[in-house]
Image (cartoon, rainbow, N blue to C red; front, side, top):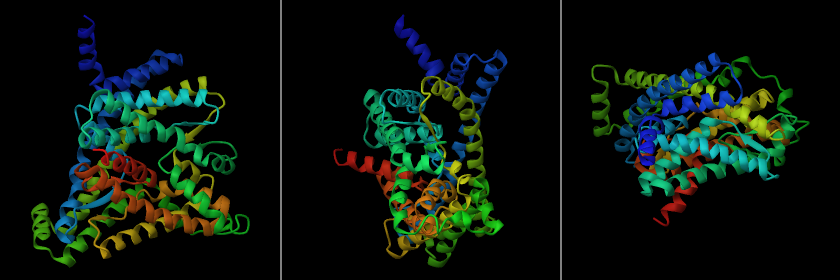
Length: 436
């Protein structure tokens, strides 16, 4: 009887991710004593948002693979990698039937354990609230431990959940004091660049005087502020990356690559085909992000209500883009420098004939630069923003190659977009590969 009930729950609840997420929202809203109408709305929003997200995730992979398919024969590399949105890996994880329900449960259980650790271990002060990052790390580690290491069941859950838990619980404390100083105690950083921001915090004091060189005292052209629009940066940067690959293919003139491009383009001009493919990829990302925002928009208040009730003294660790409001000029300066660093890495990758060519990714430059820029400016002024942005752009892009190599064929064509989301998993990948 008990086994029959478990089988029913597994077939009708745990493996039906949209339903499971909706019920979690319902439970959270009941705890918060919400009205029946609000609870129904929360359930529908979470479930519908997941299905929209799933539609976007299904379209991303095929478009992203175009880059790798063209670059491998052109430059004789094992892979061409475009550092991409972390949400892409959520989609990849959910595409594996065995992993989809485990990722959802791991995401929730890991966050709840994180809450307990923050509550009962006094030095821990930050509640990590950027939920899609928790999902992304869980999905990434599940993909690695399941497909590369061959783990299943409890061991798989412990490894994927454990390394996700370590990151979301410990890394926000690396820059906790700096965040408190920058935000006047308002919030901390809970994203994919705590380690990167920590590096910036150590570099910044060597670069300048935070009072004399304060970036917020500078007047920047208005058009630069438009670069902080995340949607605009995706729509612009993806075609730029695809045009860059098209130029490489045309200049090198490899027959196999040209044949692939011609076959893919059909009767459409090859350059136009690359631009249209990039825009379709951008559209898929928009769909994925819209769905993600929908179901996280329903989940987060339910989770946060629990957090507020049980952790009154904790500080929220939130998305890095919140730091733009604190130091807008510093963020823009850091972002421009970050872009230069990313392009330098790509050029270096070509000149050095590295086995994996990393294509610069500008869409993540704003999010990656926000907290880093605010902290760098606080400790070293605009000069620190320039230096920190350049170093982070180089390192984040270079680390994408190590991430892709560690994850193997699964990440063919794509890698994570942020410094931490590449560096931290890559370290775990290589440590476990040693004992494989």
